[in-house]
Length: 241
Image 1 (cartoon, one colour):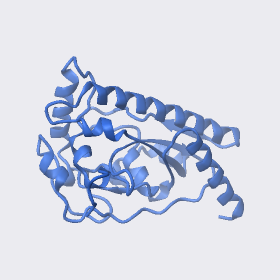
Image 2 (tube, rainbow, N blue to C red):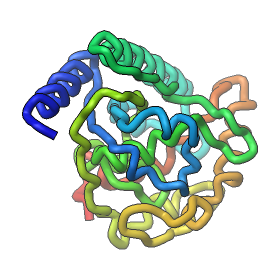
Image 3 (spheres, one colour):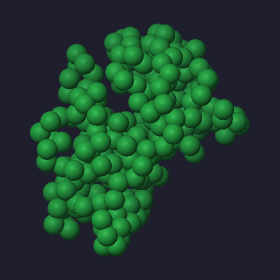
């Protein structure tokens, strides 16, 4: 890919950042692994994805407890998802205006309740796009923000230069493993990706807690956040391992 593609990539990233994305990366979808059960028909149509993240407020995340994810976090969660969806829509429109196909994927949408899958894995795309590595909780951990981010993706045919994945830096840390109320995080050790999601996470156990919280009229949304809160990569006062 030449100078024109590099400039196209730079302009697109700048556009997304100008809309409020704190992190922007490009994933080449030919490297998307079947372990994430990526929709085959989408994979055949779109060779690239724009991965974008908005950081979460430290004040909000630090207020979460195992007993109370807090109404403030619920509102914050929904607000950030809305912002992400708006950014994705405008990035997709930008790609279309340049003459390329594009599809914004909702920031938070479960299409398969049994397997807890969306249209694509935003986390898998973010890892391919170099926004962070996949932590033991399977959350994307960014060097600056830790897992205190929410993600969205735009699939596109626009020729772009993919970013490179970054090295996993969780090391021997087990903070998220120890804090999980459902013991859902299995402390899998892997350099880039878990071979299978089930090796790293009991997704059904995690979902039981999320459903219980969502059933509480105080919250009404599947949120938890305790593993996000404890990660040393997200804490200003902690020195990452």
